[in-house]
Amino acid sequence: MKNLSIPKKLTVSFTLVVVLFSVMIACIVMFGMKSIANSLNSFYQGPYQTVTASEDLNKSLNAQQKYLLMYLTNDDQDSIVGYQSELRRLDLAMQSDIAILKNNLTLQENQDKLNLLIANSTTLKRLSEQLQNMYSRGEVESAKKLYYSDFITIANASQTLSSTLSSSSKSVANQFYISASKTEKQTYQIIAVFSAAILVFIILICIYIVRIITKPIKQIESAMLRFSEGELDVDIPYVSKDELGVLAEGMRTVSGNLKAYIDNISYVLGAISKGDMTVTVDVDYKNDFAPIKEALVSIVDSLNSTLSQVQVAASQVSTGAEQVSLGAQTLSQGATEQASSIEELAATISEISDKVKANSSNAQTASSHADETARVIQDGDTLMQQLVGSMSEMEKTSTEINKIIKTINDIAFQTNILALNAAVEAARAGSAGRGFSVVAEEVRNLASKSAQAADNTTSLVENTLSAIQNSTTLVDKVRKSLDAIAKRSSDVTVLIQDIAVSSQEQTGAIDQVNEGINLISGVVQTNSATAEESAAASEELSGQSEIMLSLVNVFQLREGATVEPVQISDLPEDPGYSDFPLFSDEPDLFSEEESAELAPLL
Image (cartoon, rainbow, N blue to C red; front, side):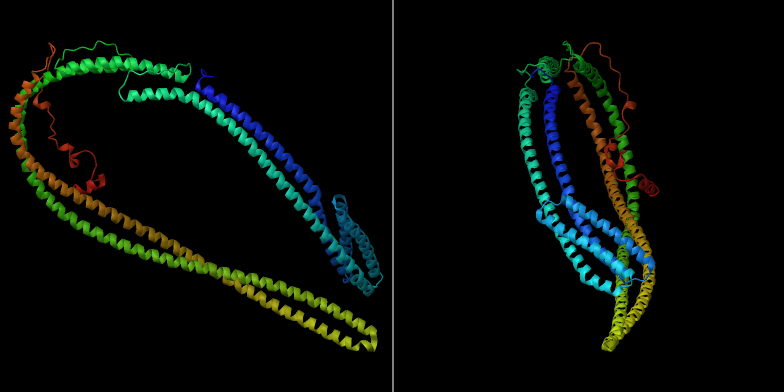
């Protein structure tokens, strides 16, 4: 594996790791999914079906009692037919639920309770048919007595049994949950074991790959460190056909070539340092090193040409010194005029700065007041939202009161029916039931008054709801108005803040202008002093040109070097002030807009 390329080494290693990891994940996922599927299937076929069936059975028993009672207390034939249909539907539903429980219950005690529930269901069906037959024959009172004495008792017992079966089924479902949790923990343990094994294998492969890669890298690194310290005679023992082996061989070749080039460069530069400008470059520089040879040749040729030109230029420096002296006098006179203009400009800028600062202060004060106004409006909006919430709560409460009044009406209706039944029974009892008849009459009167009071209360609640809805509409309009005011206030605040920011920026710009004017004033004074010094320097320049000629004559130049005389017109017109920030092309102090504003003043 040593002679394989680095990409192939990494590809083989990581492919093996990925394959093993994928196989492990696939096995674990298949095992876990199968366990989960089995648990879900068992749960759905067992506890889920039994709990659902027992709950539905309990609901059916409740509904059976309700519809049978409504059947016995209703005189409308259409309603009676509907109640009979519902009773038949409920009977079929209970039989279906009992069949589900019979197929899914596993505990013996639950099966015993189910058998008792089946017996009760048969009895309830028989009693229901008997009560319907009695009602159809006109034996309403006897049917009601049988309903309250036998049917209700058996139905309640059946509901208790169905509730017990539901609780037991929920307990079994909980056991299924506990079993599923154990399976989950086992799956996690298996994943942990396999993951640890794969991790150990990956670590071993990584250690091997790191060793076969880092060993030659360390050798090359050591050689590069010696290169960086200027030691070119280095040895790299690593030999291979991979990328690192090719790199090591290349380093050895580079070391030899660089040593040869540096020796030749040292020879050429040594000759130049001794004043020998006739030296030549004889070593062959390959490829990208060829420009070095060209540069050495160019340096020698350029030095020959430059030194020849220096000889000619030194003779012309004296003439240039006289022109420099004349220019210095002109510059001094212009500097005096500039100083007067700058003083007037500084006074004008100072007045502008004071006005801009006052404007900035006023804008900040207005921004503070606008922020306070926005906060007050937001507080008002919050209070309006709370008021709307309170009205919504009042509306909900009124709705609940309506429900309670409806319940009172139902109670009054039932009480009235009971009073009528009591009056009938008192009439049958004759003189012995007169007192009971009086009581029944009073109960009926109370029921009638309760119903009337409930109707009055309903009317008041409806009026209250109408008033609340109107108030809610008005409050919503007020809240929308506050929102509009808050938005306008926010817009005003933003505009004031923009004005404040602009004022601050103007203040900063004016400060920069002041700094620039002060700087210009200093430059003008410097120019005046420089002009006086330039006249003295021109005389010194003439003496230095003679010294320069004597120094150039020390160099041994090539024969036949041609030199073009340097004319005074070829010299740069810039006296050196372009290096100063105020006179350079870079916009260090002023933008284009600020420069345009300052142009009339300057």
